[in-house]
Length: 260
Ligand SMILES: Nc1ncnc2c1ncn2[C@@H]1O[C@H](COP(=O)(O)OP(=O)(O)OP(=O)(O)O)[C@@H](O)[C@H]1O
Image 1: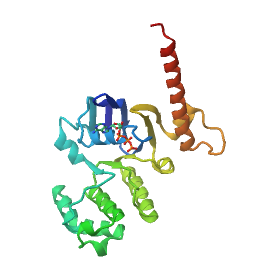
Image 2 (image 1 turned 180 degrees about the vertical axis):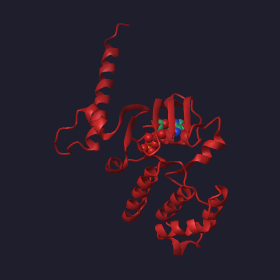
Image 3 (image 1 turned 90 degrees about the vertical axis):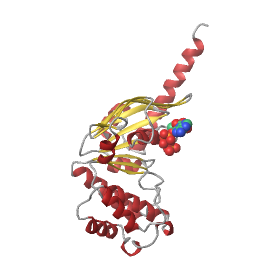
Image 4 (image 1 turned 135 degrees about the horizontal axis):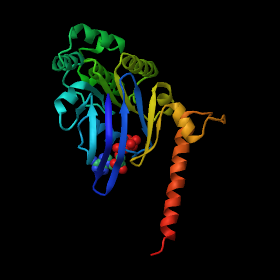
């Protein structure tokens, strides 16, 4: 379970996220979408305790990430978009280290199972600094999943993965959620979000433009009728952005016409 309530983050004059609220119940895959600079990574960084909210609260499994960081951090796995891995360790050494930190039962067998899933078993004793970007991404994914966390938080999961691994990761997220766990991901891939997410929030410049299931977003944007892109998430996404731009234009005109 993830609960974000009135989360706002400012960097000096820039409001990166403005009054964001959403809840992700267990069993759900939740997608955080938005253009560049929309505030997705800032939200993820708050969820994993890397940045302090200017105001509002962020809870994971009921624990406030800033007030109860140890309990909150024990409850989630995090896959960053650019994972940092200790280059002087082998994949097996790193995964053993993670397994011991989280006291994973039967850790050796679990590590071998995961390495086999991602076709990394034969490279498991090589130093991570020799791994390709995609191989490192796979090790980061295994590190997050090894403790079988109740909550999985993922920033741009598919970058650098080959098509086979990308499909596997999609299926892993689905399985994880279907086992009653919570998955939150950000992505620029609208087809991916449409294929895997149960609920979606669309952000733009720190503001929420829309939130809900695909059905709810279709209803909100009136995009259920056919057309070239049909009722795809791409169509919904651009409709939300167009509506926001029209609103902003109206606000500017009102401001300009207001008496001094
Ligand atoms: N440490 C920081 N200092 C100042 N401004 C920041 C900082 N981190 C983020 N921002 C600003 O906050 C806004 C949101 O950035 P964020 O990285 O959350 O966007 P994003 O949705 O993840 O974008 P992208 O899709 O490009 O990764 C941007 O205007 C960015 O410049």
